[in-house]
Structure formats: C-alpha cells, structure tokens
Length: 288
Image 1 (cartoon, rainbow, N blue to C red):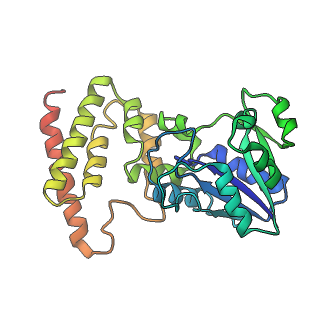
Image 2 (cartoon, helix red, strand yellow; image 1 turned 180 degrees about the vertical axis):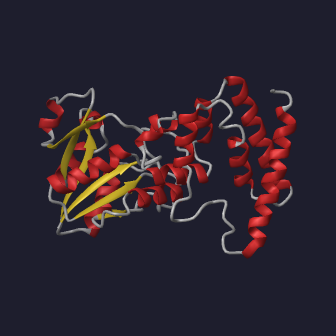
C-alpha cells in the first residue's frame, strides 16, 4: 500500500489541512492517509485543546473521507519526553513493513529539513513530500533530501489565525465543537467587543465557573455561558446572524443537552445558567 503520513498539532484542524490531505491522496494515489496529532511538538511548547478534543475535531473534519485514519501513536506514549519525527517513523515502519510511506510537510518546514533530528535517516525510511505554502520558495535542501512536490494551491491558513478569531478557516462543525467545549473562547470573544467589556466578560466567566463548581454545577458549561453572555451586545446584525448560524446544534448533539438523563440534567443546566446570568447582570451594572 501507499500510505501518507501527515503530522501536526491540529489545534485545531483547519480547511488548509483538509485541502492538503485531499489533494495528497489524489496526487500521490494513496491507499491510506494517517493523521498523526503530536503529543509534544518540538517547535511548539503548548496547546489549547487536549488530546481527545484534537482527535475528535480531526474526526469531525474528515468524517466523509474513508481513506483517512487518526493515528494516536504519538499521543499514546506514556513518557513525558518530547517526541521527534524519527521516533514516529521508526514505529510506523514496524507496523507497515512492506508499504511505501510518504511523509508530508509544508514548504516552510521542508526548507529547514536539514535542521531536523536524524534528517538523513528519515529521508531513507520514507519518501518526503512538500506542499506549497505562501511566502516560501524551494531551496537546495529540498533537492538534497529528494523531496517530491504536490502542486496544490498555496495555503496561508494556520491554527494561530483561528485562535485569533478567523473563524472562516475551519469546518463549521469543528467551529461549533470548539465553542461548545469552551475552546479558544477568550480569543474569539475579544474580537467582538471593546477592551472594557472583554475584561468584564472574562471576570464573569471565571466567577461563574468558580460559583458553579462550588454548587455542583458543570464548571465548563458555566464558563462558556459566562464568556458568551455579552457576546452580541456590540455585534452588528450581520455578525449576529453569522454567529447564530455557526452556533446551531450539530448532529452530534450539544454540550447543553440533557445527555440522556431525562429532564433532570437539562433542568440542572437551565437553573445553573440562570444563576450565572443573574450574577452577570449584577456585575454588568458596573458596565452599563
């Protein structure tokens, strides 16, 4: 088989990722694409979503592509050491002994591949593949390590852009999942309101979470309610309509549903959120 390997933090997976994955499957005629979320990326020191949340967002984004498979080899490691590409590739070669492996990366990473740990050994174990990314050009490093190239449309999307509020670069269902799980909220909310109201909102959210936990109510739901309680006050009509559309309940169910516990779970959540909004209203007196 011809198997692609695409690693990254995927925090979260965005449309640039999915476009590259789909184009690589077609261009390289791959039988399978392994999506490998990193546990400890040597180039990044932290992440927002936890391992399970990143896996679930990948599955949501690629649910219609039967050739894609999430490989948890890296995040399943029990030690706390940073994991490098050479370690993952050696493990995958043990699993796929007779298969051709294609390791993919962006032009920005490919241009610095000579700085990677065990770069030469990696290039001997797999076929290296680079895809276009805006602002980066081919150099001698790519020839030295025998890269293949995917002639795809250049991509400028990044997870950093999403965290900064560019919601259009992710799948709608990924966006909804992120909000319903309280991910990246402070980054998003700050773009919809003044600095003064944003500070107020963060204060309400943190207080709501503390109050909820102390009273046996889901702290995550309380935090989300607190972060969103003022979200529309400074939005124009178009922003409100778009936000309503993006936040509509996905087919997988909402974090605010009863979860199958009859009316009790739903009632507890409603009461909890009502208390939170009451607190927000009191604090809001100092804003308006």
